[in-house]
Length: 271
Image 1 (tube, rainbow, N blue to C red):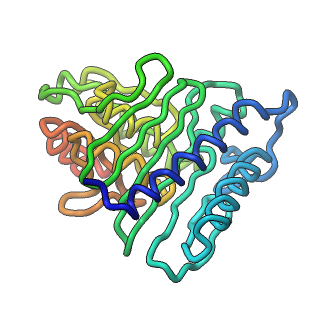
Image 2: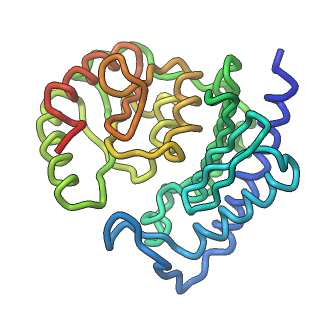
């Protein structure tokens, strides 16, 4: 039985993600432009990233004013309730800027430092993914309704479809490309979708066998990592570590250890 607090957090996370997703989908201006840059001139923020985060944090503060918030675009506040929301209002901003469909809203809730609720809204797919710790992972769409997600059955690494992402700092990205080039002959193929949250949910849904990336922030990971784990995937970072900015890995149980080992051997976590 779901904890009443977790059920309430899930309700709010789903509402916030749904509203932000609708704003981003329906409110995207035809002349959308870059509003700011982050780590490099090609790591961008649009006016819609900021508007979506304001919508989400405003809704949270109205309904749970004592909670803390960590938001990608600076909407961060300390709380006193033991609950902290970790929000990526637009994961896949470059895709969104170019009119590509692979972008999402990611909303997670932590209780005493552990993620207990995660929601990823993918409006251009017409899908929402969610999980409560201990309650499994679920996908909802208008066609099929709600269905439980499960990662793919066991397959060896050489038959694994693996996704990754690349940093927007040129020298880091060059090193990531070298690591990917070493992996390509050892797996079925590699994809680069452009949204960490969606990649993690695709592992959960059985659409990928594995995913890895260096340089992710808590808001990139929080919701998708929980969803992947609740679907039966294994997640981590470097050996014996949790996912972090050094390295995040999510994969089926059969693929996780050999993929993690190769990434460690090839130095995927450093320049």
